[in-house]
Image (cartoon, rainbow, N blue to C red):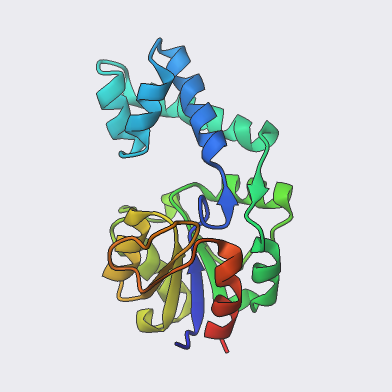
Amino acid sequence: MTSTFVLFDVDGTLMDAVANQRRVWHEWAARYGADGDEVYAVALRTRPVETFAAVAPGRDPDECLALLHALEDEDVRTGSYGAFDGAAELLNALPVDRWALVTSNYEHRVRGRFERTGLPMPGLIVDAASVAEGKPSPVPYLLAAEKLGADPADCLVIEDAPSGVRSGLAAGMTVWTVNTEAPHPGAHRNFRSLAEAAPHIVDALT
């Protein structure tokens, strides 16, 4: 296939942040006297506001979110991050105006992580603050295509999570999964690692 643009998810796709996310949620749980493993298990399946309602009922959700954001920002400043093998080489091989990041995180954290790992930045980041509906809604990927002046049918989405796959498919885009042993339902192609996918992603733009 040939695509005009490549749209990347970040966490789990370009960067390994699982340990960081687990640590942040465990610290958050400790502040509320909750079990870290139980809270993290819920957080993996739900949005933060839904997690708060499930594990800290009766607590002010705004207070819960403010603490989570503070812990996440501190982790960006002090945590240890690693890009997946081949990520830097892949991104540097792509024309800067033909790829973008579509993430459920916030842009300032993504920029902080990229700076610490040496990954190049694209011209466009669609983050959680950019949209009213996050993945699995198609809105984030459709917004990225709109801002790039691209037809959704000409976009290749690189994802690792089921919600991201559903988002890209609902946007009418081709979706490849990476860093997973088996493809998520609907994905057009799967690679066990980003490094394995990299040459195919480059070829897709030529």
